[in-house]
Amino acid sequence: MSGVRYTFERQIGRGASGPVWAGRDTVLGRQVALKRVGTQPGEPSGPLGPDGAREARLAASLSHPHVVDVLDLAVIDGEHWLVMEYVEGTDLSEVVRSEGPMVPVRAAGLLAQVAEALDAAHRAGIVHRDVKPSNVLVDAEDCAKLTDFGIARSAEDDALTATGLVTGSPAYLAPEVATGRSASPASDVWSLGATLFHLLAGRPPYHVGDNVLSTMYRIVHEEPPRLPEFGPLDQVLQRTMAVDPQQRWTMWQVHEALLHYAEHEAHEAGLPRPVVRGIPAYVGGHGTTSTRSTPAVPLAYAAAGRRHVRTGAWLLGAATTVVVTILAFQLGRGGEDQAELTAAGPGVTSDAPPVTEASSQESAKRAMREFVTSYLAEVTTDRRSAWQRLTPEFQKASNGFGSYSGFWRTVESATPRDVVADPATMTVTYEVDYVMTDGRRLTDRVTLQLSGSGSSLRIAGET
Image (cartoon, rainbow, N blue to C red; front, top):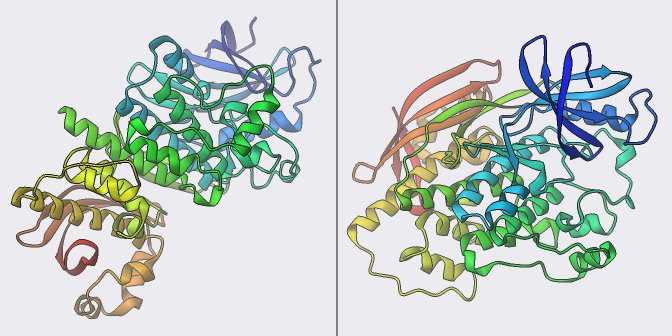
């Protein structure tokens, strides 16, 4: 099978709307993947229908390192084919099938990448609607790539917003979708949680036999399955596979939780910290581009200071269960971390050792670093709230909120790196990468003078 520009070598899979082939771009001399769109197998060829056009449009609108890139839409022998990036690897379903349940730290590192890709899709107004292990490709370096937007929808797809149409893979469907309600970003969160369950348990959260309706009944009416033996990751399941969509984390919160877990586990195992690199996050439907710092694979170590997420209260509000969970991720599963986990829910107990001066210093450093990353996340999205993190004296020295806001409204994102906290002097020094609203990228070195402690930290000065 051949075309003018693309050759077809072998079938490597099947997406939501057609077969996927490995092929070659004879003009650029590179390997590609080609997926038939627009018609189902056995149907006559014809003009590209609305479903095929939608898939091509949505897939091409999202550019992210953890999404399979769409390179072209080609007409070959009268059929429409999406030409995509070729990923030399396999899908997560096959990985579990051949290797068994996945080591928790690897599962967290891989799905943190997928969560970041889905967060970018959600910000671009796209709901994937079919998140599952077989739609995540992973290469030899454990770089995860989300694929198959065949049944994805955007906010502009009015024809797909009606209820009563159930789409997706039954074992990973959110309860509200199983009852015929429209899919939403929260539905993708559930499906990613179900994918995490599959990786950890070595099986889907729900068995799908011949009676699909029975499976959907269980999803809607039974308590979601849990894996308490996995500690913090089971708490991720609780906040993703929550029956009430309002009780689920956002996709970005899932991403951050998985990052924190992977970082702690890698540190405990003595693994080196990966090199952090700046990458384009996405290009939305209106041509808006943003950047983030994303860790090299397989394990993720990203600072919490990311564009658009108000992580301040999430990381520092000690009264919330989310904070207890994140603290548990950072502190680990022994000593003080077990005390935090006990506060998060029943059934977790520990004999915590006495708090030493060294552990107190580490706790203070951690709180200072988290304050900075959460502040830089908040200041680019909610300047009024971030303003309250300055002491009254520093607010006055900053010439009031108008001057403060005037600068920060020109900043699209501010991503810290190499954050060094010194509790003795109450200073935090870091490099920060700015993306300005006019597209410029700047880097600065900043030292903040802090006052207070814990959740009462405030910025008292800056150099």
